Length: 387
Ligand SMILES: *[C@@H]1O[C@H](CO)[C@@H](O)[C@H](O)[C@H]1NC(C)=O
Ligand SMILES: *[C@@H]1O[C@H](CO)[C@@H](O)[C@H](O)[C@H]1NC(C)=O
Ligand SMILES: [Zn+2]
Image (cartoon, rainbow, N blue to C red; front, side, top):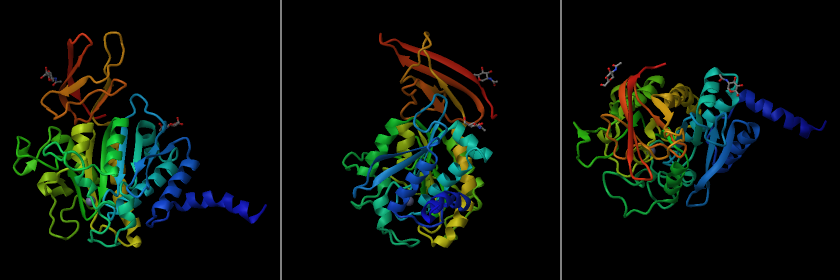
């Protein structure tokens, strides 16, 4: 046997023992890694690009799950997005580590196995690869934050509270908006750096009834607070106030986005209002681009939180709306009494709905227009308990 083939045999073995190296992988190395994972785990991964950055880099998404290539009824879709601010590099590193962990522990670790058997996980490690490549490797510098056109991608989405139609949508933002149309995502988070806090919608307000005591409160505030606390308390120190010793004092490590600072055109409000996908903004490191020696510690601090957050995709109710012939109904409005969402939640093309709710007693109203124009309404009430 030649030395070369021996190396080929040894390499996958060594890499699965030691895991992915804790360092910053550039865009080419990241692409290589994702392709390699996809080759090594073809049954539980699917790699695709949702578009290109301004400079032509692919926006790679790795899907993980028991059926990675397609949606299955009853399996909710989850996503993580990293590095939308190119110089906030820790999220990108942690999402690659998460991929490494989930793939290498599938069928050996019960939690990873349960997660991939019961949900479909989409990971976009870098939404702004151009920004990443041009970053100054510093804690507070903004070089690399914006995309190649100098635009802040987290200000470039349509905003329900103020008109942003005059703004041109950047390629990276359009790619994400199109991506949201292809799947019915239920839960999501986008990962940032420069603080340690879990921030939840709304990020903006126009002074309407949502504005309460300096917070911009959504109809699903109870669920969002629970989601943010799930992350902050599963994290080694986010729930401790003032994790970054910079006078930012976040009680329990969570904050309403608007209360922290108003932010128009953000991705989190867009996901929630228009794509019925609950999204948090997770600030996961005090330093935006820390020295590589700190990466193992940041992974250890965030790993339990990343996993606990993913499990929340199963909160609440899910089901299929069927007509009297047992045929699934697309686009039916599924409303929870007392929760007036700006855009009512609807069933997807398979007639499915997913609705994150805390344990309680709810009335669910389902309505749809038939071809004749008659609106059918049915409702169901009952207590919801945690399993
Ligand atoms: C997960 O799915 C795999 C493949 O179908 C199966 O072998 C395994 O027993 C399942 N494990 C759990 C914990 O559901
Ligand atoms: C749930 O609420 C409905 C409507 O208010 C009420 O009729 C029902 O008794 C409640 N059920 C429970 C178990 O609390
Ligand atoms: Zn950011």
